[in-house]
Amino acid sequence: MFTQKLIFVVISMCAAGVVCGASYGVPAAWNAPPPSADRDRLLKQVRSSLRRTEDAVRVIQIQAYARYYGESYDAVAKKAVWHRRPVDIARLVATYDGLPRGKFRANVPYDHTLWVGGPTPIAADRYLVAYNGRFGTYLETYAGEPKNEQPFDHGKVTTGMPRIRRSVDAFSGWNMSVYGLTADLVAKYRVRFSAYIKPNQKWAWVRAKKEERHGRQYVQVTRVGDPWGKEVFLLDPRHGYSIARETSYGWLAKRTPTGGIFLVPGTQVSGYFVATNFTEPAPGVFYPGRLVIKTFDRRVKRFRRKAIIEVLKVTANNLNFSESRYVIRFPRGSIVTDEATGKRVQIGGTPKQQLREIERDVRKARKALDGAASTPPKR
Image (cartoon, rainbow, N blue to C red):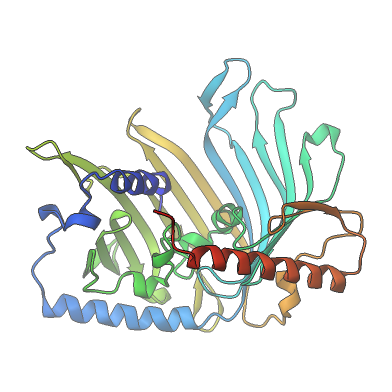
């Protein structure tokens, strides 16, 4: 899932009328290996075990510390430069309901970004974010320069999933786990991992085989097709077939003799992650204790970004949370922007009044959106 920008290129090419494998037929390079009863039996066994692992989670809370290495803007050189020390550090406590795109809440007490040569060495953020399955709430309590800290409360209500969820899922390692790893940029692919690797898909093929590494047995699952090109997953049977490693190859544009362009799975690694130190916080629930992620930049022949995520603590299932946990309660005096109405208001009511007003505005916005979607476009 490391080629997030690339999916927008794919969509743009298809929209522009460029020949795209997903729209005009599967290129020859996609042809799957010949079927094998043993491989099909192995994949069926893996998917069955994965479903048990996925279903074991009812609620899970993750405390993590993330460090990102890569390029950061240098205010003196006026360009992005590579750094050996972290360019971004974050710590958070995230709670999920166990579904890839389900309810969640995260408290990020700090998210510091390096700014070389700027007025201060670090820009900082501190926020709470939640999604209850209907609408999202976001409360930013501080953003700016640490040495000139002036806390404030700035809230936001979204009519759908908060966009900052991607950062939260990356900080916690959720989108690299067997529970949260899914092609979430395309709505139709918002599925569990066991469904993502099912065989006989319309625009993808999946094969599995056993593999031994460092004296341990794994299962290698290869998926080729929409939306991410070629992905190779190394699954650990000792931990419910959790993902020990994923390597992404992305897409490669090929030109036909007639001048058209079609996409084939590339051979150049675009990124990978390695998960280790698995723990079992509840029976049948497995979560990595450490993740190392790298993305590759083909232009300069080096890794563009590296992240190390240390999972400090994981608690699963024995948590008694009410539905209200997935809604941020805005403090009195907060300035809140409501995406449903476009209004900015200062909160002065009680939490119950706030929730009723938020739900009313979201219902109005969704009704208007549904009406617009059902109206045929003018020709």
